[in-house]
Amino acid sequence: MSCFYACIHQETVGIVEQWGRFSKVAESGCNCLNPFCGESVAGVLSLRVQQLDVTCETKTRDNVFVTVVVSVQYQVRRLLPLLLLLLSLLLLLLCCDDGRVNDPKAAFYKLTNSHTQISSYVFDVVRAGVPKLALDDVFLEKEAIAKSIKEELTKSMSNFGFNILQ
Image 1 (cartoon, rainbow, N blue to C red):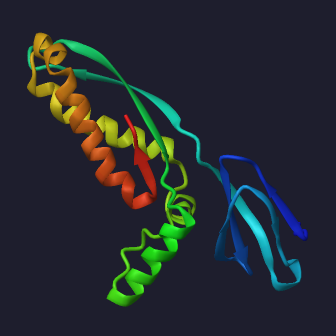
Image 2 (tube, rainbow, N blue to C red; image 1 turned 90 degrees about the vertical axis):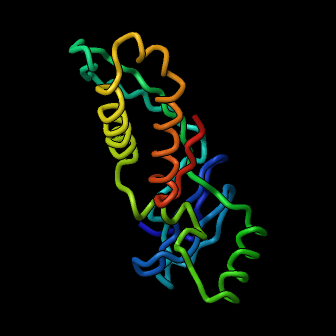
C-alpha cells in the first residue's frame, strides 16, 4: 500500500519505484512520495557490514577430508550523492555506462539471495585450490587461499553492487 511518506532507518536505503520501474534511491530519514504518480518503496537494503560463514568440506591431495570455514564480510557498495552526480555527468560526457553507477539499485535488482551467491563462489575457489595441496600445505597456504577467495568474490560481486571487505 502506498503512502505520502516513507521513513527509512539509519544505515539503510530504500528503493523507490514509480509504476513498477526503478525511480530513485531513498536515503535514511523521512522521504516524500507521491502515490498518485505511482511512487512506492519496493524494498530496503541494509548498508551495514554483514558476515557470512561458509563451511566447505573438500579432499586434499593426500586424500584427507578437511572442513574449511570461510568468514566473508561484505556490504552494499554505496556512492556518496555528490560523487554519484559527478560520475553520472562524467559517464554522460564519455557516452559509456558500465551499469554500476547506482550500486544499491544493482544490489536490489540483480541479485535475489546474496548469501547463496557468495557461498557458491567460496565453494568454487576452495574446491579448486585445496585438492591441489597436501594437508600440511593447506594450513601453510591459509593466507593465499583467503586472498584468492577475496579476489574472486571482489571481481564477481562488484557486478552486483557489493564490496567484499574481508
